[in-house]
Length: 101
Image (cartoon, rainbow, N blue to C red; front, side, top):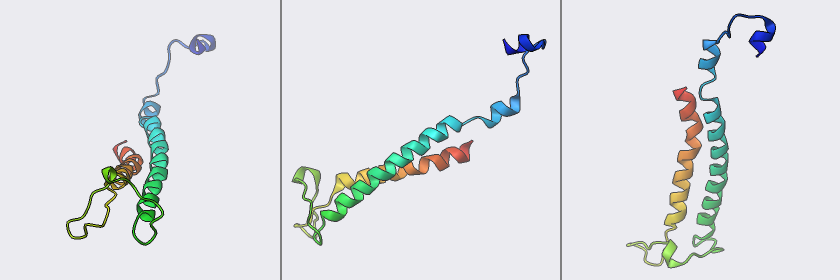
């Protein structure tokens, strides 16, 4: 409609703008996900820290932890460690997208 109102014959497609705009939305979404992942990772780290023997503020049921073959009394917070590792992958996502685009 703008093309017709201004009296031009046809729409001029700017190829450079289309190329430079690729990945912007994906990068913005990945930054939001990375921010959420950072918060969840910190929460998991705090839970892991506060359940160790030095603090003992938190305890989890045996279903969420595994024991150690060397130290049977120790509880390894596997679920929280897995959450932290997956959050680290999400935090790396914005950089991966920036390198691809």
